[in-house]
Length: 71
Image 1 (cartoon, helix red, strand yellow):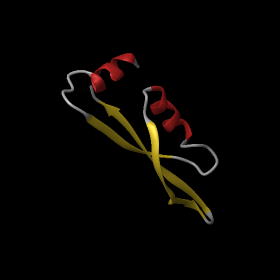
Image 2: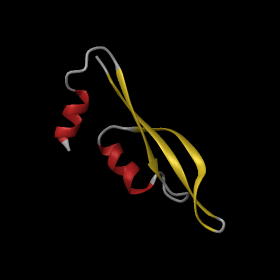
Image 3: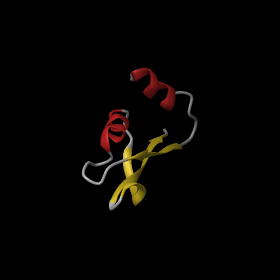
Image 4: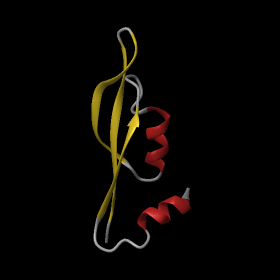
């Protein structure tokens, strides 16, 4: 985990934002994927609700996450 954090932060001149989208659930704040990225310092920046239909009347959200890497 620390190797990835160092890679994201290392060698960065100026500022840089890393962004990703995680498939989440309606009940949990982004599910297991979002929890993992939070361990690396990513924060939730937004949510696209009911983005993926998995069954009649059941949907998943996409969770937008970002990590600011800068001086």
